Length: 97
Image (tube, rainbow, N blue to C red; front, side):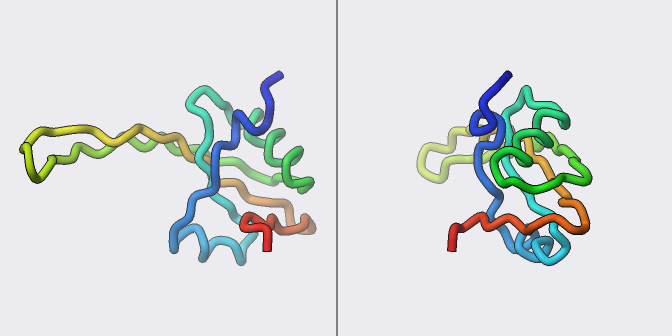
């Protein structure tokens, strides 16, 4: 059994993810080898909520050019999980306020 903190790496901080908070939908960066069942169990254990649905996205890293040297590099490929909480579940306080 993997540690839940190894599966859930960090929350995604963006305008689109903030808008989804009202519908109890949260987005996390997760480990590349994590599957939906592991992600569900990790979120339920870390945040003490019930998860209704988990969707995953594999985002390929963008190719970027260095302005000074002209060399190309690639940003990291990232796996994200969009987690929908159950209807009566508590919301997640990601920022600890």
